[in-house]
Structure formats: C-alpha cells, structure tokens
Image (cartoon, rainbow, N blue to C red; front, top):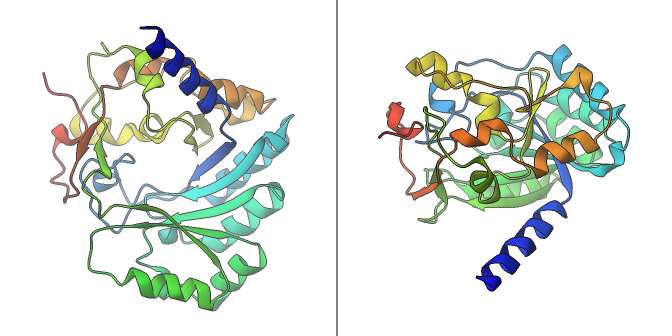
Length: 274
C-alpha cells in the first residue's frame, strides 16, 4: 500500500513538473478516418478556426502574466495541414510566442503538396514538424527526407503502426466516473486545447460538441471545465486547469487500447455503453 502511494505521489510530481504547452486547435477535419479519434474527426464538419478568433486567443494569452511559463505552442487538428491559412497562423504564433517552441502536428500525408512559401516560413521561423506515422499507404521515409531537404526540423511524435498505439476514450453519459481517478490516469494530461475562445484541459472536452450534434448525446460543460480566453489574466490559471480534475473528468471512463481501424461513425466508438 505504501509503495502504491509513493508511486502515485511521484507520478503527480512528474506530471506537474512537465513544461507547459498550449495547443491551438485549427480544425477537427481530417484526411484520415480513424476510429475512436480523440478529436471526433470522423464525425466533425469541415470547419476551420476563423483567423481573427485565432489571433484574438493568441494575443490575449500572450499578454497574460507569466507567459514565459509556456514553453511550447502547438498548431494541431484534425489534420493541421488542411487549414487554409496555415502560413498566416505560423507567423501569428511566432509573433505572439517568440520564445516558445513552435510545432505543427500532422499525419504527414499533405507534406509533399505544400508549396515553397510554406517550407520557407517553417525554416525561417524554426518550426518543428511533429509527425505521426499511421498504418496507411504512404511513403513516410520520403516525407521525412523532404523535410530534411527543405531544412525543416522533423520529429516523429508517434508511430501508430504499433498494436498498442491507439486508444478508445469512452465518455460516460451518466457522468458516474471518478473524476480524480480519471484525471490521475489521463493520457491527455497536459494537452491544453484552445478552441473558439476557450481554454480546455484536453481535446475530448473541447470537441465534445461533435458527439452531441451527431448522436444526440448531452455532454455538457460546467463552470470550471474551461477558461474563457478573454478572462485569462495569468498563465498560472492554465497550470491550475491542467493540474487538477475538472467536472468534465467525471465523464471519462478508463481508456482502452485498441488496434487502428477505420471509423464506422458509431456511437460506441466514443460513448460508454452499459
């Protein structure tokens, strides 16, 4: 029992010591169709964050006290490279967070189609391409070589070819889960997601509206589940949001390891069945 408690306290310390990064969600649309996607991309409409809203969020967060606590800024999706104004978003992120590491998360499929301006902007602004490999017919080695040829840093963030690299994150519509346990075991810990003027502790909370619209579910946000960007005064508020359970955590059932597969857009991919 004592060993378990010591291990738990160590885990909490390690999590709290993680550098803070902020994920700006540009779109939930994707050019893949993965079952159990944590952004609910298979059922998400092809919509994009308005550039003026994105700039408002970046400007407001960057003007908060203790902004230097933000060590990383991630542009994410969905599939980030689908964002029509990605070059503008990169320059905007670099303008407002010049000291933070800037990364674009992508499945890589569109990298061969990106124009020279994109590559030059990435190179000159020290942008990292954070690549996730998926078990699809695509030459990832060639895509990685392309990044090297363009002088752009590439990191393989994840390899989804492994059998244990996909997860199902079922939400309990009755909200009867133990939020503290869910938060403690959360694989999305630290994935602070900025979406449409709100700051969430994870993408599941930020994007849950897709479930409600598609399946008629009733997952709700409560006070404490997010921070309104226009009310943010100190980045330490974001650290607090990250470090403790929020009411939404009571929806989160234990994750399940699954193999990669195509979504059938069925409720059971995301909603707990009793």
